[in-house]
Length: 394
View 1 (tube, one colour):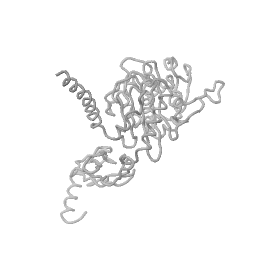
View 2 (cartoon, rainbow, N blue to C red):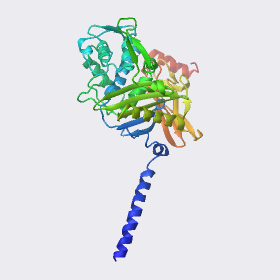
View 3 (cartoon, rainbow, N blue to C red):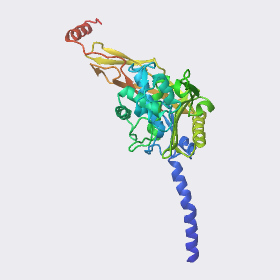
View 4 (cartoon, helix red, strand yellow):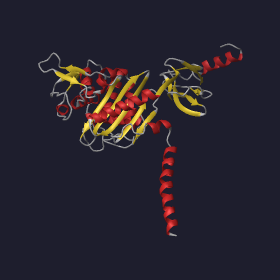
């Protein structure tokens, strides 16, 4: 009896662990399994293809953590939006308040009353992580930092982010100030849609106050822009609570990667792991383009509009990410449109979608937007259109 119990215990000891391993591996895709240890030093991490938004690797990516100066990704996003919309010009002067000048941590040592252009302030934020510059330009855009923070949180809602709330515009430690690797990757991807930002985040060194008695030499806190081929942004961060953080981007072979790491133990590990994440994406994946920006996709019918139909034009490049070595045979796309869209139609209104399949599996869906407003037609125009169709006249 004692011998039988001993044999049974040995069988359980052998079979139990083997069963656990098989169950764990079964739930992983080959890509996720291969990428499992890309950021072992990070508390949280994510690797995303910027073009398609495809997540290649993630680790605790929705954990709510202090983001430190990566907060400035959102600050820069609101700045470039204001520039693109004409509410702000690069040549506009920004005056430094006493409050802005009082910021500690990383700064460009602005003095109360000192003025710099938006262009110079943006350099100070993107390259030197200036907490003082962030507050000064926030006050310029919104009137106060708190009003600007309200805009930041409104943008969080607009982007559909669930793990983020901001209490300030620079990332200095504060209650109720948190984000996640996933949310930061989405913000970073949104920021990268504004191509002008790369001029700032991708520069390794520059000067402020160059022709003054107090020139300030800027050196990018993100050393990858110098040492990793293709790296051109985006934002570093550090506080004692957050540890070493980075939202980084690099472009190569027609692909752009976004990698975010939070809670790294030191800068060496942070940079090494992000470099490894980039290497993994660029070596293992390729982009398959479905439509390029400007391509005509089809036509949507407009009911009772001044126009009876509206052409659909690609507003961006529509593509999917494929693992290298996997053929693109079987990748197909389908335009999904309603029978008609009732007028009035507003520009950027969703009027259909482009669905990309591999076999019968949906790989990606793109919303299709109207390219212009279409007003509702008056009764006389509708009458003439109806009469014309009855008599074969367009």
